[in-house]
Image (cartoon, rainbow, N blue to C red; front, side, top):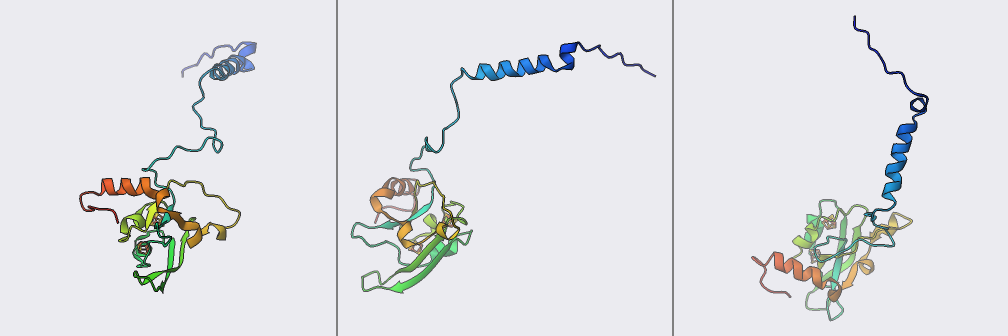
Amino acid sequence: MVIVQRKELTFAERLYLPEIFRGLSITFSKFFEKPITRQYPEEPLPTDEVTRGQPRLVVKDDGNIACVSCGMCEIACPAYAITIDGGETDRQIEREPKRFEIDMLRCILCGFCEEACPKDAIFMSNELELADTTRRGLVYDLEKLKRPKSALQPRIDYVYRINKRWRSKQP
Ligand code: SF4
Ligand code: SF4
């Protein structure tokens, strides 16, 4: 049988004082270091054209959306977040969505809709903020999804740059 001789603890050790002072000294030393945390939301996250934020619909310079309600993005969406009801138009494109909704609570920002669209009508924006008080408020309709082409231009240029092997010109 082995008898373990335990060190007799001092009074201070019994009160955990050495550990408390060591912990406090580490805490106080951090007060004087440069902070590495971001003060969100006052300090928003940096974004650029690579940022894959929420998808948005392109509004062309003539004021019409580029979408022809073909449904390719709806089929490609792995989260079943997109719902489109198409309708006829008198314009040359003949069809455009009467209802176009993206459930932002379902959207996983994968970018498949952007890749699937044959009309360059939907692109990932640099918008990352998402907050509302109701679930219905986070189902974005046509009006909430529309963005002028100029607002999405950096992303459009980026997508063309990375896909230049099989896409030669912008519309
Ligand atoms: S980004 Fe992905 S999940 Fe979101 S709507 Fe597009 S395809 Fe669906
Ligand atoms: S794939 Fe493009 S054109 Fe077709 S419905 Fe979606 S956004 Fe509209």
